[in-house]
Image (cartoon, rainbow, N blue to C red; front, side):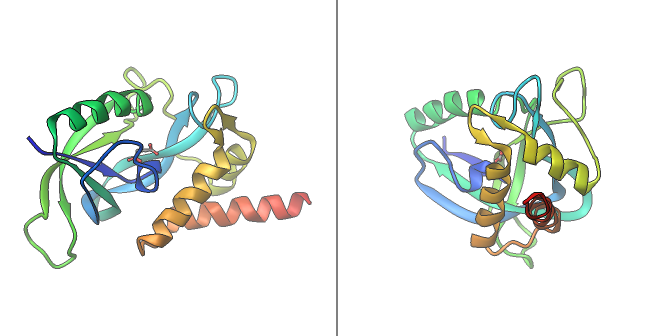
Length: 185
Ligand code: SIN
C-alpha cells in the first residue's frame, strides 16, 4: 500500500527518508502555529524551544508538501524514522490533501500528518499561545541537539517562500526575531 506523509514544518525542506514523489499543496481546517515545545530537537528540558504544530481552524488551510512512499520496505523505514523524529507529536491524523484551491475533491486522501495536541496528558511539552515577541525571544534563546531554534524558524520561512506560501504567523515571527537580534547588536 502506498503511504503519503504531509509535512508542514521541518518536513517541508528535509524529509529525511526515501520517497518517490513530492507534491506541494495544502490541507483544510488547520493553521500552522509555533505552539509546541521542543526539548529534544530545538531546545532542552531546561530551556525548551518552539516548533510548529497544527491548530484546528475553521475555513483556513495550511500549505506544505506531501511525500509519496510507494514501496512497503521504504514505508516501514520511513515510519520508524519519523516515529523517532516526531516523537514529541502525540497524534497522527489522516487527512485530505489538495493541490488546487478550486478543487472540490482531494488530490490524495489519507495523508499522514503529525500533530502536537494541547492535551497536557499525552503532550507534556505543549506550550500554546504567547505574544509574537515572547515566542521570538524564546526562539532566540533556545537551542537543542538539532541546532539553534532560530534556524528551524528561518529554514521554515525559506521553505514556505520556496513553495510560494505566505504564512503571516511564520513571517511575523521571523521578522520579530530579526528585529530583536538587530536591536541587541
Ligand atoms: C512537520 O514538519 O510536518 C512536523 C513538524 C516538524 O517536524 O517540524
